[in-house]
Image (cartoon, rainbow, N blue to C red; front, side):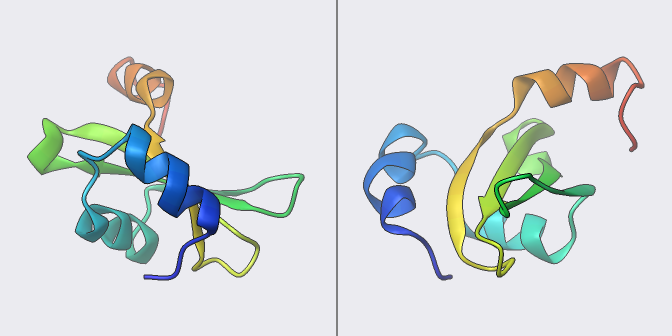
Length: 86
C-alpha cells in the first residue's frame, strides 16, 4: 500500500487500531466515494471487525496513495439514522 509521509508519521500514530487490510478493503469496495475540492478522494466503508464502525480513507488524486484514515463517527451516526446509503 502506497502512503504519504503524513500518513506514516501522523495518521498511523493517531489511529494505530486501523488495520492496513481494512484500508485496502475500503479502497477496493467503498460504500461511497467523493472527490474533494483539493483533488483528494475520500472513501467510506464499514468494518465488521470494528463493530461495524465506519472508516474514512483519504487518498491523493491518484486514488491509491493513502494520506489519512480514521473512524468517521458523524457518517456512522447518519448511517444509523438511515441518512446515508447502506
